[in-house]
Length: 612
Image (cartoon, rainbow, N blue to C red; front, side, top):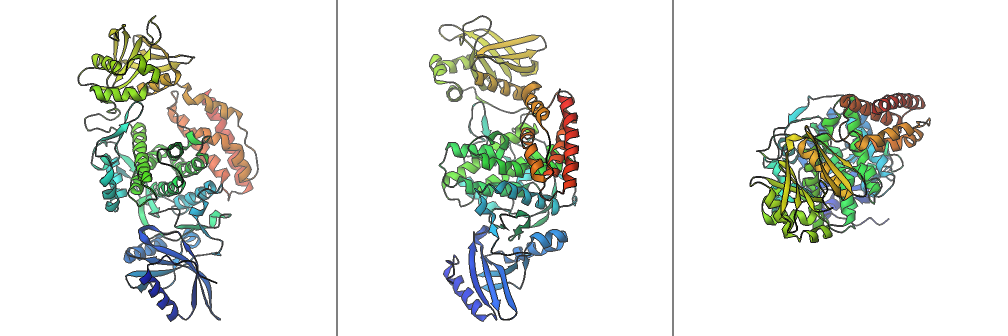
């Protein structure tokens, strides 16, 4: 049988042929596997010699780093639980072979027929991928780490990202060659995205510290170094774990695997396309992408996010795990932005993903991202400069609204209303008192909120001014045209007749700027409705998973803290997730499914009582 095309350099091919001829057995390459990191090449090979040798092995060719590879393999095999090592770690069979400037090691894959094994990358678009990733992540996080081995270490965002990227200086250097140097990347609807590289420069970090949970980890978990039979993912094998560490950040491996999948999903898409935007949403906030074009990718992302969080919530660390996940996603996205990727647009996409993960981290951690801003407040907006203000308005306002304000004239309104040191965040045309619709404006800065009537020449008058500290709550009265109601200690200020989407965005931004709690009904009514309509049934893991699927998707959605007893509500949600996960595991027995179903229903009723 003719061997597949050999991807080794010509001089290494010659050295490999000399080695083959010198062995007491025949070695024939069955297929080459997708290449590993740093140029390593892997092949499935058959070795035969009558009557003693008849086996399939994996041959790994290393252009460099043999000592590090051997050290990682040795420590992983020595330190790992015996059951995990036997089931999932390939073993080195013989001494390394030097081939010119390269090295070759021979690896034995336990328990299996290599002809059925496929690299995970081949399942990138397969509907079996979410289950395979969940099985893989569960084993890596739980079976490889059956109990805590290290105390969590508290780190700032800069310290943690420095740890993740410390051994990748070449990639960071390549990113810095083309990445923008500014502290902020670009304007979104109402804010600027932080430049993720600024975390490493010691800016945008504040003093917030996150407890980093550590344990045994792969170090480079990706779609090209996992082999598995697609129909039985529990029999996966890790074939490239030279970067193993026994005290590594546990949240890194799932996000690195997700980033490597993103490379495959990006192939065939166009830069700045809706498909790539949907993919970013699926990776960062999968619950928001379940019904969109990236629903397959969202299911995979949700599985990888969920499996670590459910274990952390069992131990009371759910919130901490989520912050570690976001920081890990920033670091992994920056790593991939510095890699050689199929097209240049992918580098920018990963850099943008890191920026979006950074702003999500800042929102949820209440850390500050400017040295002069206290934790919990964010230096948003742009300086009080006409060009900067006009740029924000061009993105925030509809075409008709911009025509009404003749573009630059609404920028002049902002300049008239703001103080010299204030930063402009947003403007929305509205109605106050009994004025005509659109003849007034709501203007928000980083420290104040103002409403003002506008005369025929768009000059502001009857200005009402509130500081952020005066605001106690913000909510929206929906309608064909919606009202934003700003509640203070002395009463209410109503900005009426906004476009519904603008009203929603304005309220959300004001809540974030002021730290005020959103209304209880935001997101909780839907959860209560789903809890009420859920009936757990099925005696098998699959049946239980199907009956709980809608509830699990609702639990995964982001929502503000529940006002009444938020700690107990969060605890019940964590317990419910654990019960759902326990009953849905492929290996769960009928009695385990029954126990999980009973527990889940009991917790469901308690949570529903809290919410209603």
